Image 1 (cartoon, rainbow, N blue to C red):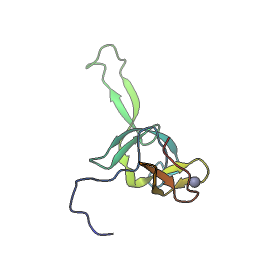
Image 2: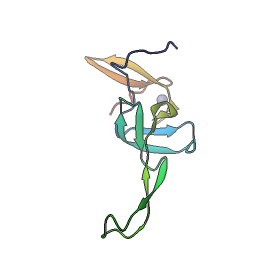
Image 3: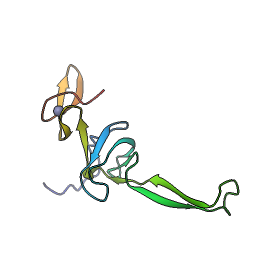
Image 4: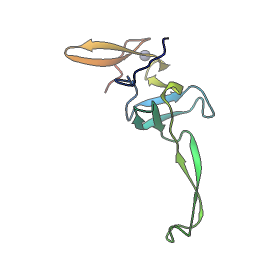
Length: 114
Ligand SMILES: [Zn+2]
């Protein structure tokens, strides 16, 4: 693949509320719902994936007991695959249905847009 020099119109095929599977990295194999998409960074926030521990300071917020809270951290879109209900993690294709462009499963052809 040629190196993209332009940042305009970066195509992101993952959307909020999609179910994705983590393909590489520490959380490989995990599935989760996409909480947020960051198209400019090509990153996503996936529920219960890439959890990081965050120290809660009792000094900063007296109402919070000091301790450790866990939260999701952003991960690269390249490391996740959209999950097709029939096939599992798949590559995404595109098709025009009527006047709408939809995402389809490359394996079975099912529309992945709700
Ligand atoms: Zn499929």
